[in-house]
Amino acid sequence: MTINHQWETQCGRATGYTTAKTMLPVFFRTTAAERMLIFTTVVLLPLENHLPAVGGLSALFLMFVVLAVYIGLNRVASLDRMWLHPVFIAAFLFILVAGALEFTSPLSMYGDLARFGLAMCGALMISCLCRDRSALRAGLYGYMCASLWLSSILFLTSYDVLSGAVVQDFQDASYLRANAFRENPLQGNLNGMALMCAQGGVVALAFALASSARPRFMYMGIAGFCFLSTLLTMSRGGAAISILACTAVLFANDLKHARKLLIVGLLIGGLLVVIPSVIWSRMSFSTEKHHGKMESRAWVYTTALERFPEYAITGIGAGNFWKKWGFEKGFATGTRGSVDVTGAHNTILQIMIYWGALGLVAFLRIVLRVYRCIPSQSGQDELSLGLLGIIVTLGAWLLQSHNFYDKSFALGLGMLIGSRQWIWPSGKGIEPR
Image (cartoon, rainbow, N blue to C red; front, side, top):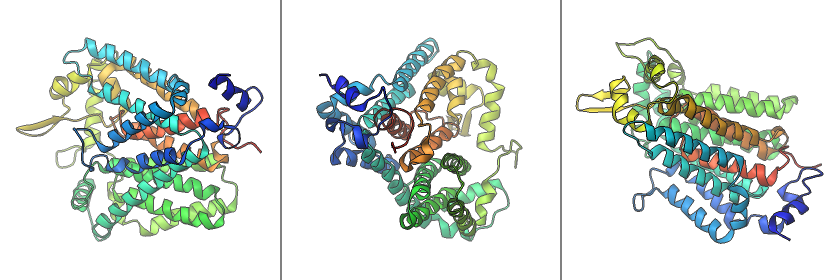
């Protein structure tokens, strides 16, 4: 009997759905070492740019190499089941389409596509390890732990500064933001830090909604602290991501019980009490110029819309954008002698600029395949509910960042694809009763 046949026989796909907890063959269940690998990889995500590089390779990249070596030595059967998953096939087709379009453009550059391919390889590794509920739980705990320690640093760095500050407008708030985090030991993209805090917060909220009384208050505290730190970054994208993810989790959980409404009310009320009022000064968006200057996102979006006919069908190429076209068409920023091209701060728009409608259709096919992996009854189980929150944050992040090869996608998509394949093959996202 082959491994695949044995798997299908034991799962009973023809008659119902299954979970790894009750039906997964012993040789596919995760070990403590595998669960620790998933947990550690997630926890290290915020430190990607701060741990010492080895041979020019980041610590997180090396962590994925460790996963690949482990799977190659111990879990080839799992890899054989996963590598032809529809999401990975769609990703491969996107790379082919975008690569062909990039080849036809001047000053071709394949760095972003190579990074995207590596991110999908990372997602494949994670999906091979996320084979049962214990592994998924380890990954979700990893998000909470990573968010907690990052939130602690952000809180200690900025809360006192922001609490005593007064600003007049958006520009003043932006200057204050830069000064507040100048002494932050983790120098990096504040929007990315806000994403990580929001992810831990939404996972904690999911666990709070699904837990009994005693753990519920602990998870509520974690969620509140993480969301507070998300807002302390003064990131509009972080605030929007938090709201969207929480809304998705709450609707999926079907808020009908008074205790759940009380949880949400306490969380919102507590945040409104402790959030520094200066935070709201930066939660606006305008295309108007202030002091002769438009805010960065508005400037990029309006410039991209003005140049839309030039890249609408086949794009202008990634290399051409960064090396020539972006300088000539108004995407450059800086001072004399130090000018750089600015990305679109939006994956959909950036892919359109790179490879036009043809590339965007290929990319949206990946998004559709990912959407179909989301369990249909996520609100009935704390793990599927937390995973839903992570996927919503990543979907919103596509509209905030042009780095579609970000390693955060590798982690979230890997956990979703693995869970859909191994834990909830029926797509229900619930335990059998």
